[in-house]
Amino acid sequence: MINIGGIVAIVVFYLLILFVGIWAAKKKGNGGESEEEVMLAGRNIGLFVGIFTMTATWVGGGYISGTAEEIFGKGLIWCQAPFGYALSLVFGGLLFANKMREQGYVTMLDPFQDAFGERMGGMLFIPALCGEVFWSAATLAALGATISVIVDIDVNISVVLSACIAIFYTLFGGLYSVAYTDVIQLFFIFFGLWVSIPFALTNPAVSSISPSHVDWVGTLEPKYYGQYFDYGMLLIFGGIPWQAYFQRVLSSKSASRAQILSYVAAIGCVIMALPSVLIGAVAKATDWNQTDFRGKGNIPLDDEQARMVLPMVLQYLTPAYISFCGLGAVSAATMSSADSSVLGASSMFARNVYRLIFRPRASEHEIMWVMRISIFVTGAMATTMALTVHTIYGLWYLCSDLVYVILFPQLLMVVHFKPYCNTYGSVASYIIGFLARVSGGEPLMNLKPFIYYPGWNGTEQLFPFRTLAMFLSLISVIAFSMLTRYLFESGKLPPSWDILRCVVNIPEDVVRVSGSGDELEPHDAMGEMAVMTGLADVRKYSATDEMNGRVNPALNLGSDSDEEASQQLASSVAQRAKLQQQLSIGANSIDSPSHRPMINRKANMSSAIGSGSAAAAVVANNTGDKQTTL
Image 1 (cartoon, rainbow, N blue to C red):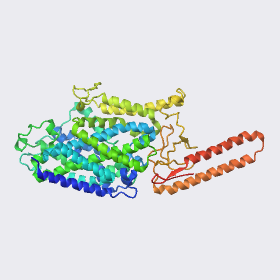
Image 2: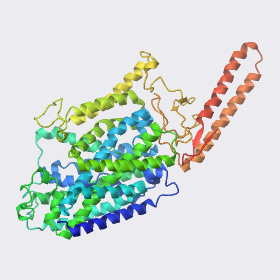
Image 3: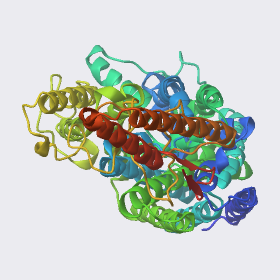
Image 4: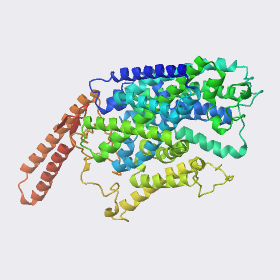
């Protein structure tokens, strides 16, 4: 029988979220159809909204439901997600937030394409895309199961309805809608779950939750130390290279604020997990034979029912009107995860794949339409997988591992150690990391291991093979980059063998700026990249001696730097004119025929300087649509 009260509660909640999402979409400024406005909210996210939306990076449906499930199944000591994801925000702030925001990147893939080229960046898009899509699908599947428990409606209807609402307001509002709905959704999660806890604790079927009475803390046997360490490292460092996180970082008003938001959100992650921890402890202390669940399932609860302990506590241990509040909390948590993942995957595709690989001359209007279509397609993919794929959690776990193994070590290199990596190292790291991870198998996908590491117990790997794969990936990118650099620069391999054109066989469209040692590549007039002259100290976004990259695709000078850049350009042009005048005077003062070869060389130098300056002195305004060539 369909619960009319629950249906009404869901409709009211969804309408509120939809209203907030549409209202937030109207906050877009005059540049509302630009990349930065849609993807990064114009880099104008305030402190209050920023804290909430950064916290919502990980606090979603899977986060709160999974925390309760883990407390009920294995105990608090094995519930690593709240602390692991909190530490990932801390390390993300320490290692990446400041540098990424200072460089003015738009997506997480920008530094990869800056260092390794557009096509390798497109390859790295694959694990990032799969992680975002599978994460959205997993949270939508969790939502459908939760609603079906409390409201008794068809799972498919609840999943499709939730996905449609999230896609709709994300489609029109971009990050503005995602960020402002995150504020409402986190309030629902926090208060919805906390309101239900007193009723659940005082239910006659629930005994004391004191650890001395019921063991919801759990134990950690020595043989599981390696596996425990592996999962912890996966959560901490594998939780960093996600577009959903960097979208919040890059939308901050400044680099220092991006760091502050990461640190505060880490505290928020732990706080938001507390009600789920208590709900898991309540479920552990419940005699389910004394509830209305008796006769509807196995008692004690089996593994499948253990996944649903949070909605079961809300349904069977609290009054109906309280369970509806909790249902709103779970729905809010799910949409706060799904919308940001869909937006993140669409942003990376529209910018880093479509624009920088296939359509470099695409206009802002075209990119916005591609992004809208991508939001719809990505949302549809996640919804379809949530409804049809039964191993969705296994797929998400495997993709999370690939994000940790492949993306994290390469992101660390391109942000902090860019001179020591090139495209060959990236390719080798990609392949070796993937094979090393797959070699350990994945039980949730029935993927058999073909390497049995020490500690194999017949069913699972107890050795920290994921972290081993990550270190192999990290070592590979360094070793193969240094090896190829040595082979090509020493002449042991001819330049024609540099097929990736990143060490010595440099494309002709790369301009060497005199005296700077930097490689700058002019892009099309419609692009947003600005190439600055190397004769003055103009801020650069690509500076690598190996020439294994291109101009940073994220380059976008702010209005506060335009005047300074113009002055520096004028100074460089004046220096060039003065040098040409000196060369001309020198040529006129030398009449001897024996000096004519020198005069010709000087004239050629003057011509080269003039043509080089003309190619390099390109300045883009804030929108990247108008350019002036000197």
